Image (tube, rainbow, N blue to C red):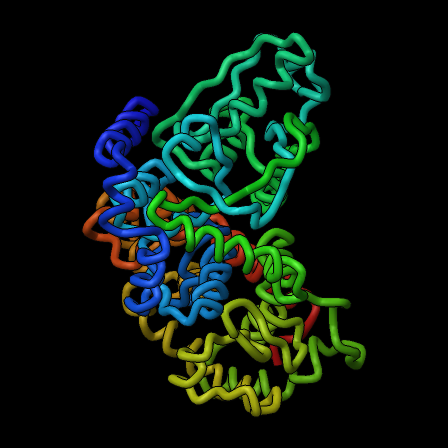
Length: 461
């Protein structure tokens, strides 16, 4: 949506409620808050992306989602979430009064502040320039290097205001290009693949996405730490005040710090480790080699592949709890674990034995159509990582765009990456919605390369 349409929405909203005294006579903010509590439901809007809200192994996850869940629990309400493609459409939902809160990394502007209410900061971060690592004149390390350059931002971004303040301070003249079709995560990808040269986002966000691109630099700060906030309809001023009190308290807790670290200090494994492996004997992959080989004989697959998956998930450490409640050596989600008979109380050998049923299920799901052994392995690993729903979506997308739905490399993997785009995940063929496919592609590559390494180091039998 263009900035003009966003402004028009605000004007129409303002015109519809310009006589605030009349609105107050109909219902006061206090009465509105009581209605909210009596409804039993907190309605929130947020955006699809790989930090705020996404589906992983069939479970909704995300920093903003988990913050909202904590707030709903505090208020004693059930959380109802509506997810939008971008902040512009999310603002529309809020302006229309269909949502109580717009959750995200949003910064108030002079225009928005005329029509909407903002919370205290749920987090803060400097703004950084995202660019490619380079030794030539295109690399920006100081303000003067930005002279004549073009910075591309999502169309709904408010960060241009903060960057412009510093551009005046340092007497630098550059241009903004506002892209209405791409989110910040796809703009960062465009920087990496040389489609654009520069974009800007929060440093904590840049840190996450730079993990996927080894040619990305985000060292140059274009604005000091900015407050990132939630947005409220004006009728919900009491709710906003209540949220501010809650945020002030919650941000001091260990739970908040753990939650922030979980999403903004991302590692590719769903759990964090203090060291790489449990102690094991020489020439052993792990202390579970015997049960891995026994399982592989039963299901007729290579035990070293199963070992590569487990290493990626838990590094063979028992008792770990990961994102969304995943647990154990295989880091299965509770619903999936129950389906295949895996429980947290099981020891490592039992988890491996029962978890093998899931690997076998996924192999049987794809083996009749995916006949190449290497490609079949990659489909199984991808479906294990993110859930077969996203993989099946990518296969249908592959058919639609003339790619081979039975080949992972450069076919289905590239279609899975397309699922980060609204124009793709809103297609009727797509059943599981948004997915940041870069994460799954890297996971598959990591497991496959580790498997090849294991084949070189450990004997097959």
